[in-house]
Length: 206
Image 1: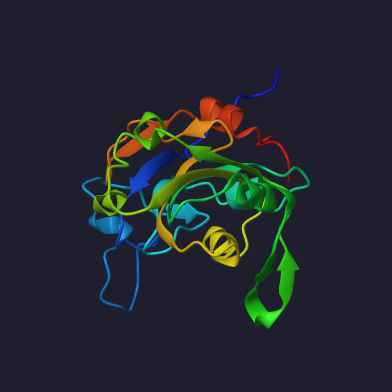
Image 2: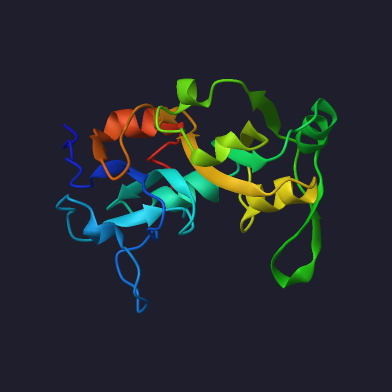
């Protein structure tokens, strides 16, 4: 009879606050994941990154395979961002974002972004309850962008390439794991089976 093995790995999501880096250790004087009010087990690391000025869904786990399975496999997994930009975005500009635009990537090369889902959002708080922002007093637009790639600062570069400065960037989902109403700085733990099902990745892949 085969022996059933019990996984000791653990799986979390957090709502990463603004002005916090996606790591536990840094030589710089910055807010770290370890500053959150949660006792993470040894070996916990972030899967993918959100820069210091970005907010929202960040996956943490002790399972070293997850990054490779999610971001380096043949299947392209979706990441969705709620983006506040300066000034009013036209439907023509949304079409540009959808079909791909030229951005500058690491090394200074120009890169054409892959086609993505892009739409104007009329009620940002229906997607993310903490979307209220004082900058909404000035001409602005909330966008919802779903990408299957993640070049360095890609979303910020994409909206800047169509002449709109990114004011706020919130990742609201990765595949079917959704941030929902999780408050900034709060941690949520998932059972292993549900975690892999929602991310649509197969943990048996080597």
